[in-house]
Image (cartoon, one colour):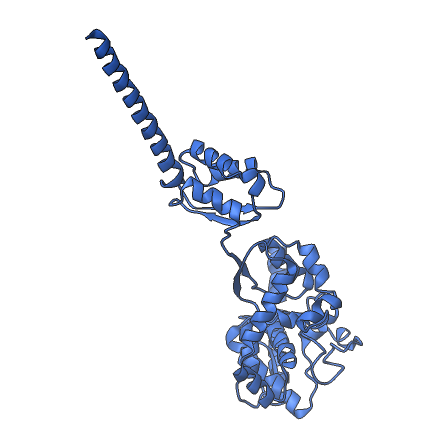
Length: 352
């Protein structure tokens, strides 16, 4: 009887032990594979040759890991050290440990937002914007912007490549190669130039590149989007009459945008980009024109203005004129206001 009782106890203990083990295994499985394991959203960037341990530490700190042991187990089970893929990964609180690890092992990236905005007047600035947002090296991008052999596959060269890039926000994988980045912009360029836009350009007697060139001049003249169509109309009127464009931004381009103000001596520079010296459009864009500037050229205001100058109100707007005599009056008003402003500034500096 006693022996039978001991047997029952032993069997019961074994059953309890097995049940406990099963419960422990089940709970660990749930913890690793089903339960959310992160406290907040986190964006992880993994560079080539990044150590798996550094990745785990980054996730633990940035994503507020709830059960680090669960994460470590999944890392070991999925062989993350051997399978880790470079990329940009978004970790969310709803993810389990195993999903996050498999995401890193299989390269399930989240797209990166690449935004081109602001004034882009140099290839260095353009390359820097791309390099800051993508894994691609800005130095490599900069060199490719000057490489005709590379650019010809996209239909551009080192002089007119500004026209390829249309400022906007695009989504692509952070690990995209320079080849893939340039190809994406060519795709966006083709999508932007719809048959309707091409027809509008032809109606103006311009091709796509000439539209981009004129748009870059408009972009250089004003920061006011509302003025784009009006200024575009001025330059189109000048082109139609065979007048020189006499656009200050083209002269500034000749000097790498060095002068704060364009003076008479600057307008004498011998360059095909100097529209004070040579009639017609310059050979290529002088900056990366926004889409709004391109559309302003394609849809300009209709008027008889041939001149414009900065407003004496110093509010960033311009005053427009149809005759040279009217333009001179506007220019003198601006110069008087500028002189008075500089005099007041000098007086205030002395008083301080």
